[in-house]
Amino acid sequence: MGSVKMILSELRPSEDAVRKYRAAGVWRNEGPLADLQKWRDETPEAIAVIAYRAGTGVRRLTYREFGDYVERFAAALHELNVGPGQVVAMQLPNWWEVSALLLACARVGAVVAPVMMSIGPRELERILSRLDAGVCVTVDQWGDVRYADAVAEMAPRLPKLRHRVVISGGNTSEDVVNFGRHFEDTPRERQPGTLPGVPAEDPDRVAVVLFTSGTSGEPKGVLHTFNTLYAGASAIAHAEGLDTRDRFFTTQALTHIFGLMYNIMIPLLVGGASVLSDVWDPKGALDIVAESETTVLAGAPPFVTALVTAAQVEPRSALSPRMVLSGATTVPGQLVASVPQTWGVPLRTLWGMTEVPGHTWTRRDDPPLWGSQSDGKPGAGLELDFRSDTDTPLTAEQPARLFVRGGGVCLATFGRDSGRLRVTADVDDGWYDTGDLAIPDGRGGLRIIGRTADRIGGSFMIPINDVETELLAHSDVHDVALVGYLDDRGNELACAVVVPGAATPTLAGLREFLTARGMTEWYQPSRLELVTELPRNATGKVRKDLLRSQVKDGRMVDQLTV
Image (cartoon, rainbow, N blue to C red; front, top):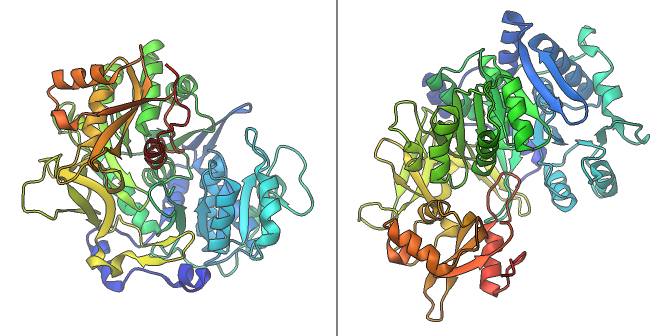
């Protein structure tokens, strides 16, 4: 891998790809700055952002005001000598400043690296080092964690880190840039000529670097252009008729691909409003969704499940979203059934990943409760390829490995630790190995069966998602994850790691329940472990890598005593 700055400055899609995807309408000649300018001109007083911040209330920014802040932030970055190809990392809660900073980086041609709040100092230092980040924007303290102190401690080991920028409610030390004073309090957008030499918007340059969690391998930096992101945003926006009347709320972080797409890229594309909350609380989130008149509600299954549960306990008559989406991990069948009962609209299940913003989703014309059988079909920016080593029909027991290709796939990835660069178009004719196992859904879409790393079985594999979904319907199962283990003869069997529900389940009882529901006997778990909670990452995905190692060692962390 060459220098990071050279790669970020020079890596681009081929001219053939640019011509192909622009001709198809998958890519375009402009980026999100053009979207912002459009709405500043056409609807300057329309609401762009509704930001709820714990302890300080709610702030509403019009497109005119939001655009002014983007210009102000861009000028502030320019004064820090941030320019094309340079990296600005930011580790911030779900605050409106994240959206404005992302666009400000685009304004000066810099690359933005959003980092989840759950990323610890050790991992953050590796990210900053790998990217040669020149600027890191963070908060002084969030919860019990002192983020600014952690960055200060690692700064001497990061010679390329020129500026530490801190959002603080009080005073900051002299060796950092106080975000309020430098970015917000100086109205530079009214000063002519504050951004000399800024390049024209280029939607095909590397603009965003996102990092995967690394739960099934080395964490990767995922390189996106604004066109690879646009391919995913425009597909669903056009298909679903999203427009200026829509208000978007997601339970996920803005610094994650889910939040980036549904709380920044899509609202900005259609001229809608982004609704933000910086703390997660199901009851409070429902109040926000109702008060803001949210129309598009999206989130990972555990979070949407919590919202449904809260809504059933305390219904809000003002809450009537026209679209509810969920995916990224197993979507329980009962969640698919409960969303229309709660809000009168079907749950749209989806599949996507950090590398693939051009996601799939179920459609308005699909059969009722189709989300229990499908993760949807792709938009124009994504092709699917189901690859199998056998000629037998694809089934849940013998699924295919899922490959994808198109304008909605990342430009490249690189190893956070190894630095190994993989340009998507240079491998396998552009087909990207997702690591997922899937089957066609019969309507032009797919059904995810599981991850290759998580597969259980030999010649025939156990359909993990199906078993988990069925177990979640048991009253004594609050949460469950299926992982593999080897028996005395070396056969790989299924272990159900369960968080108990109404009562403590037994293995015999769970197997009897699955048999009564018609599930094949060898799919069923032959071992049961009880825990008080499942380990999940910040996006709601179960850390099955941890569970597998614990099951293998015969010692479950956080085991429930019965």
